[in-house]
Amino acid sequence: MTDDAKTSPETIFEQFRSIVENTIPEQYKPLLAHFNEQGLFYQQFIQSLNSKETDLSSFWALPNSWAEKGPTTEQTKDWFKCFYTLNAASANNEAPAMDTLWSLFNPSTQQAHDSLKDLHGAFVDINQLHTELGQLALLRFEQLQQQIDAEPTEEHVCKHWLQAGEETFKKVSQTEPYIDAQRRLFEALNQLKTQQQVFGTQLSQQLGLPSQQAIDDLKTALHQLRIEFSNYKEHTEATIHRLDQRLKKRH
Amino acid sequence: MPAFKPTKKNQWQDDFALLLERFKTFDEQPSISVGDTPKTLIHQENKLRLFRFSARQVKQKKTPVLIVYALVNRPYITDLDDDRSLVLRLLEKGHPVYLIDWGYPDSSDSLTDLNDYINGQLYRCVQHVKRLNQIKKIDLLGICQGGVFSLCYSALHRGDIRKLVTLVTPVDFHTKDNPLSLWTRHIEPTALINTAGNISGDTISLLFETLKPYQLNRDNYRQIEHLNKNNRALEHFLRMEKWLNDNPDLAGQAAVEFMQNFYQQNKLHKGQLSLAGQAVSLANILCPVLNLYAKLDHIVPPSSSQALKQHIKPELYQEHALEGGHIGAFTSLKTQKKLINLLHNWLS
Image (cartoon, rainbow over all chains, first blue to last red; front, side, top):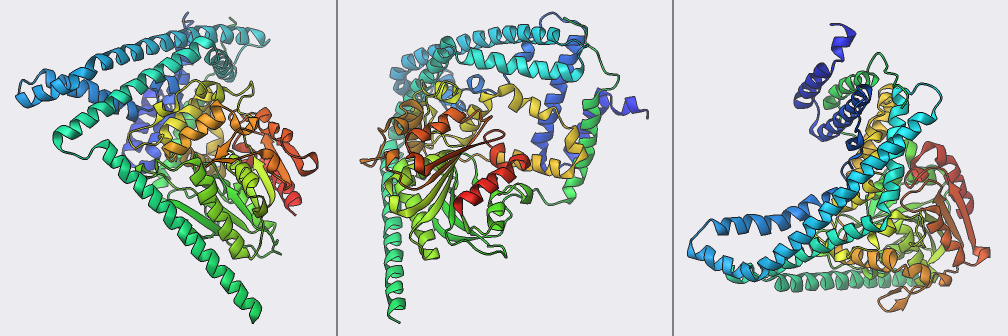
């Protein structure tokens, strides 16, 4: 095999798959996948630049960002599961029990709908800002490329990509519209969470499960008990230590 | 735009192929370890564990140092590996070292508040260290949020602390160059609370990554050539990855209070903070304070740390800038010598 064949994208991809699937310990697989993903990203960027594509702004789409994912996927999943999955199930099921459940959700459905609308609006605004971010970053990248005297190398390109992205993000993310869109996003998520809690309470009542209030009371009692126990233990140990010191002094 | 000069070979692909070869051997080796300096568990309550590190064969200092790390991320970053261990360097200089591990809060800890952490858990740890060393005052070394806790503690329990070190510690949360503060100032903190009543570690991690999205998510994984050339570099990289992805959830009540009181209302700096009804005034700190900040810190900007100077009597206050960023300030091989000399000279 020639050197070129050994390192062609196909070979690398095959090597990657084979090694990751067969020989790499589980804990390192996500890391290698991440390396691979980033490597491909830079290769695509360089290829696009080489082939003189005009709009490269999508290469500054935010990777794995706070605003992109919201508070956490886990959290969002919880809420969406509640509002979408259950509501969809109830809409397709005519069994009386489900009808009863549906009637229970109804009071909060309009609110949920409004919150989802707010959430969607905030996402749209943030996405719009991210699109602008990409365009501004591209302009900055072009400036940086033009500023160097020599012909830019791959390393220059990657460094300029980074500098353009970070500088532009720093500017855009601190503007009023960005902060406001982010605030609205979290506000809408918070409203959904409140409605989820109301729904949870209703469901607990319906199914005879302990209410959230009962669970919170237990948590409060456990918390208080832990504090009292820790204080008591500390007090006892301090007393024993003091007595021990006194005894040592006497002898 | 000037023409782009393509290289004949794709260097990254070559490097990645080599890296894959290196990883092939990893299934025969034990997984990468962290926090290996020998230590003994001396106190435990709920999730918290207090450790004493084993002394080296050198003349021992009288006053122990208690390291207080943040609730965010894990404290083994202070003992990542032998080369980059702040703990080990202190032990080599003869300082008895203790470390608080706050643990991984679960839903039963969601009501733990800042008072529980500072006047409860931290207080009891300090008393343990004092008793074990038969000493009335100890030294505190607080890092980041742990530095904030240490400041509050030193203001409230003046008789317990001989000297205080704050490392990359925010004091003024409203300085102009603080994007973290700018974003969180407008967010209702309870929106971040998950169904367990806590703030997920993943959420916090995502927030920090978003401060430098392109560098932390992409560029750090582009440069792999040095990982192939040097075993220690690869091991260090893997240890850092392990640490970066090891994010405990934050106890909901304490996290909300921290966001509201510090990030949003800047109460510590304004002198308006109180814990369980007790005013926390930094002016009450009467022990010598060494404040160390990082020049390139994007999480705690230097100006945020340096604000401490306004609160401590000049004769008690010293500050020094360290090269590097928030974590590099105490893990980087370049800064370590300066850091340890500063710490050793000052604590001695």
